[in-house]
Amino acid sequence: VVAVGGDGTVLSAAHFLDHGTIPLLGINSDPMSDEDKIVKKKKSDERRSHGALCAVTAANMNTVVPKILFGGGKLATRARIQCIVKSTFSETRLVPALNDLLIANPSPAAVSRFRMGWLREVNLDPKGGLRDGGGSGLTSGHGHSSLADPQLLPRNQDGTVTRFGGIPFDVENSLNVWSSGLWVSTATGSSAAMAAAGGKHMDIYSSDLQYLIREHMIENVPNKDEVRNLDKGMLQNDQHLHLRWSSQKGRIFIDGSHLMHNLELGDEILIDAKAPPLALYSRSD
Image (cartoon, rainbow, N blue to C red):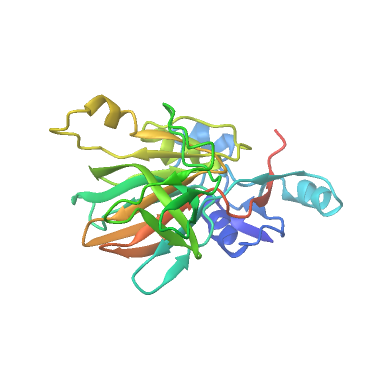
């Protein structure tokens, strides 16, 4: 598949390649030339795409595209985000995100309330308890390890089990969050909004994800330092992040503002790196 435009066009095209078996080539149709940089007062033009996801530009496509068609070019896989939303009567798997997800209130001035935790796959025990299924909960940037040996887990009186795709998970290390929302990014998207929000740059070929709570409001809690340490962290490719939405309305923005999914009070969200990776051509420089 060839996407002609800019980074936004590449991101939109990637949403249709949800199986990850077809390569994607991005062509930046309006790159900024060296002459433009001299003529303009500003060093960059905000109306133009950076072309970070484009392997080819309009200036060099006559020479680069034939090389790619005959087996050349730099083709590698990029990790993507899998996001599943479970509502009262339905479960929706969103399109894979190549850059990032923003989960927040539809109004930027409103507080986003949710409960965030980490999922560990379990097996239901016939006696009514839970048995460790050997899955892994998330290890935050400051280390939260999952149970290693199979053992019977006590059931909370309110119940701790949730299911996605019929698979039961136990929610661990959860905390209530009042904030401006949550960023989740891939390695590809770690240099964009995530970096501007205070996240860290990642190797673009890493299969891990990164999360960051935006403007986390921590008030009268006895363990402020512990809660603050969970503001951001890494999500390895065998781990699962879980949200239960506690606001009346919410929205998941997928790779920008054009594609979104609305949330209602009580919706549950599973986020991990299990989406099929994308085969993307990159610049050789």
